[in-house]
Amino acid sequence: MALILSGKELARETTRSIKAMGFRGAGPGLAVVLVGDDPASRVYVSSKEKACGRAGIRSIRVELPADAGEEALIREVQRLNRDPDVHGILCQLPLPPGYDRHRVASAIAPAKDVDGLHPENVGKLWRGEDGLFPCTPLGMMELLRRHDISPHGMHGVIVGRSDIVGKPMAALLLREHCTVTLAHSRTSDLQGLCRTADILVAAVGRPGMIRADWVKPRAVVLDVGINRLDDGTITGDVDFAGVEPLVSAITPVPGGVGPLTIAFLLRNTVKAWELSAG
Ligand code: NDP
Image 1 (cartoon, rainbow, N blue to C red):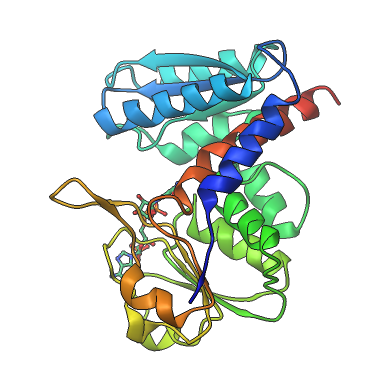
Image 2 (cartoon, rainbow, N blue to C red):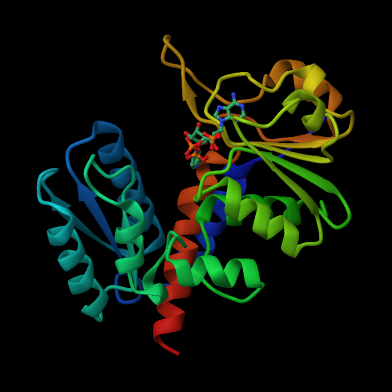
């Protein structure tokens, strides 16, 4: 039977430890910029605000209409860059059509870039320097550490090459001396490749894609996928029931990687506040 890696527990513990710092609104401030009216984005932004409240971090919501335009959004980001009460800034993704997410990410001051998408932070990540890095991969690395799973010398296969999950996860595993393969929709023999993974990270968005005959026995499986089925249930990219009996450790969905993202956003906000305090 596999060890179930509970992100929910780690997320709770992370939030509790920030709350214990006793900021009560006087310390770190997080600005979340929401452009347009996407219902899912609105839910994510509310969840982030509630988590800030639980941890004693101030949250500031900035809303712009979908047709505000990229220049207006960048002006807003620059205003937040100058605001000494704002320590972390993120623009909720996806942005509406017509916005260049790379240009917007580059407008955020690197020291306030709590999503870790500014080119300076991306560069620091790959160079092995300290910086602000994407929250979901940071959470997964801490989850491995908490369970004494060392990627050192292992073969890590990551399926999905997004800027926010797949690529930064590759960099973080590499920093821990893992041998990394980053796979995507054009990878040939993906199933065969996945079967060589000691650590398999699924970040695709296709329910149940990774089945029992895709995994190496005793592998560690991290399922990032969040897929809503027609009946309203949430499921991951991994066929949990089929895979769990074969592997040594696995994250469930829900309750696995999902809760870590917001918890590590809080942690990045505290880090940004510490950076601002020198
Ligand atoms: P994207 O949706 O940006 O990209 C998906 C990636 O999967 C791409 O690299 C794509 O390849 C690859 N892909 C698509 N189809 C296949 C296929 N058939 N075989 C192999 N690779 C494929 O990824 P995200 O990282 O934003 O999201 C991935 C999943 O993780 C989603 O379910 C999302 O909801 C979830 N997620 C969960 C988070 C959390 O737990 N808190 C946080 C962020 C995301 P290509 O590049 O070639 O198109």
